[in-house]
Length: 76
Ligand SMILES: N[C@@H](CCC(=O)N[C@@H](CS)C(=O)NCC(=O)O)C(=O)O
Image 1 (cartoon, rainbow, N blue to C red):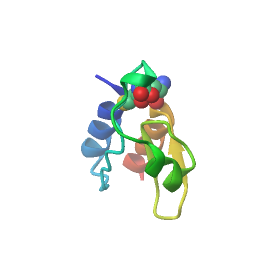
Image 2 (image 1 turned 90 degrees about the horizontal axis):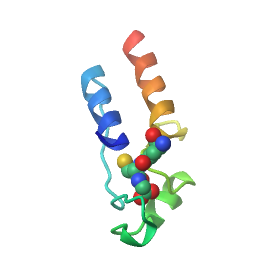
Image 3 (image 1 turned 180 degrees about the vertical axis):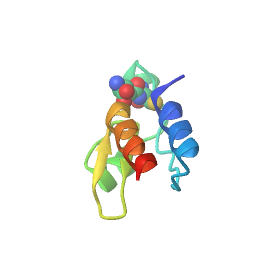
């Protein structure tokens, strides 16, 4: 399962509401990526996927950090 999917499934399981924005399809080989990540970079300051932006503007990148945030939400 790729990292974006892992994050999405964890958020669904934890009941975290979110808006999913697909800005560019990832690929290990940069020139095989589809779509631009400019919009993502403008909105979050990073071009990494997965990235989560919270209502307060906090940006969390990397699936492990996002999954840790999701786990905290599930506890509270
Ligand atoms: N170690 C990173 C890997 C992230 C990753 O592989 N993301 C995929 C999309 S889910 C990707 O962007 N792959 C290559 C790319 O940059 O196009 C994480 O767990 O967040």
